[in-house]
Length: 172
Image 1: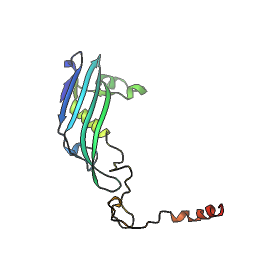
Image 2: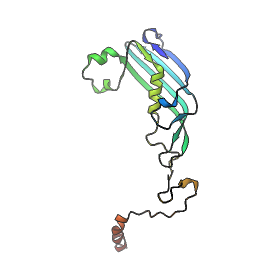
Image 3: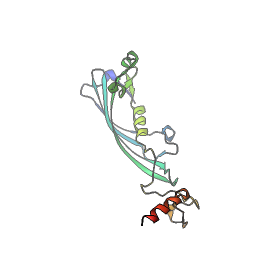
Image 4: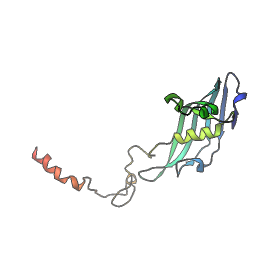
């Protein structure tokens, strides 16, 4: 959806829309959309600056980085962005710290669909986990620990640290 900057109403524009993206557009390799992406965005123009404030809601299937099982990840993420015209990007060879955080629009138009996809990709966890206490895969038998099929007794101490056990015994 293209937003024409010069046609934005003075009071701003509220856009509520569902997007059907394809999973290939996601940065996370094995991620798949389970639901359409629902967005509520408010766009306001003040001078040449464009303010976007919105919320993205959807559900995506991700792969746990510990046990490699698929799990549903709900996204309910907000964003607050400021866009400046491209002329300011071209004219300034050096941006101050505050200007470096701002984004630029080109050709007096903004692609809302592209902005939503960028914000959606920012909402992904760095290390997707099916649960915070996921124990992953057993290093001995290769079974998934949370499924209970693993009865291995793994030596949890590093053999290189065995020498330090002498110190702890002597202090008792």
